[in-house]
Length: 361
Image (cartoon, rainbow, N blue to C red; front, side, top):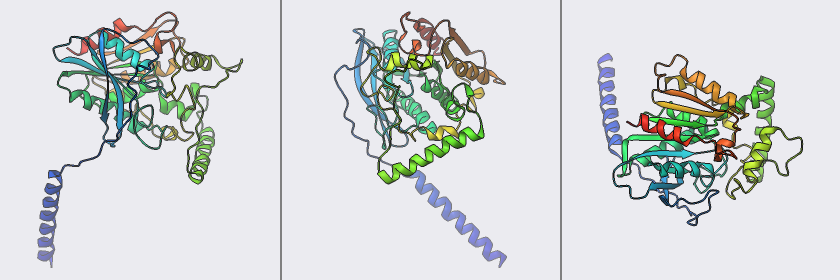
């Protein structure tokens, strides 16, 4: 009997290996979503005459097609360093991520500013959802795309994230080994704020339970109604007693300074249940294992300053690679001042350019 069992075990192993080899030889094809992209210039910033602009698409490993604006320095002949840009959380590429991308292209980088999955001109259904996993993957997919371009130097690729996408850029840096440098602007840790509230004011089991009850009750209603209720963007009209940071957001998203018709924050916001998964799916768990260069930039007047400061401290704690990590404080800058520069044009583009150039060598 033991001999028979032994023979059967060998046969099963051989069959398993054969099947494994067969499956490894297969390639999986998928059909890319067809997106309708606006070809007219509809940004919140003026078009530069120093770069060539075009619309492009790429896909992530979930099969979602993402839309992006590409900016390339005019008359570029050699392979270029490249940067993928996204953010803020609930914004679109026609807002400040496009401004960063175009400005960095003026300084010699090939850049793309992309809309995350389920938002803007990018694909993905249902609309207006967010995911710690998929949104980190969006950045990695952007890297995939950049590395596929003949005019990109594969040894000089980086990412830049703003606001909630600053935290997601840092999360990407913790898993992505192909990028040489990451820049994080006025960041949010979306998992932290979802689970603990602003300034960690709701960091309790009871508060989280109440929040989860609300999400799950909404799920029941959404399923019955076969639709998704929107949560609302930045409050409008602005109450006189609104907190400072709400006024800061209003001044960007609800005025000609930053309003855009496709921006969630400028209009009806995310689905109520759109950000639910951030509560118990924390990001940045292994940020102190990031080997690549990271620059975190935050204004000291930003309500979110504590998140950037803590993220930097957690990143360098017990990290063997701290010589290439920096935390730059912009004195007097609010959260949205680093979206478009604010009244005093405080975005340190010289520093950002130098940082990328230093670690792209």
